[in-house]
Length: 127
Image (cartoon, rainbow, N blue to C red; front, side, top):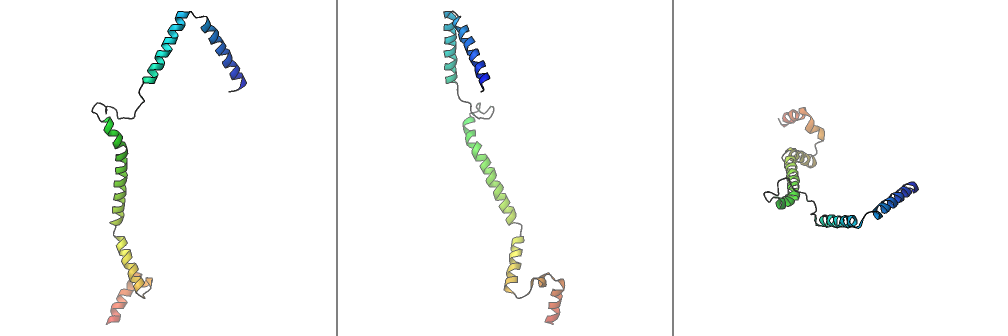
């Protein structure tokens, strides 16, 4: 707040104070009672809660608070389990591991397994 705004606010306060001094005693008393009543109502007001619309009718508002955390967690766990199952059932991991094991235990180069004519050459050599 700059100096001009403070000066303006002080002028407003002075005018309101001067105006309140001109009010009669019964009006000041009624204003004071209304203020106290409004403050009491404000203090007694319940805090807002997050519930589903209409859930309080069936008594679901107490149950929903637990579901608010459990349901997204269950969806996340099921999604991750589905991804793991899908990746595991692909079948290529076993084939790749089998080819890797054969290559590591044998002296044949990698190109030999990729060459289509190598298989026929092996069959001719066995005769």
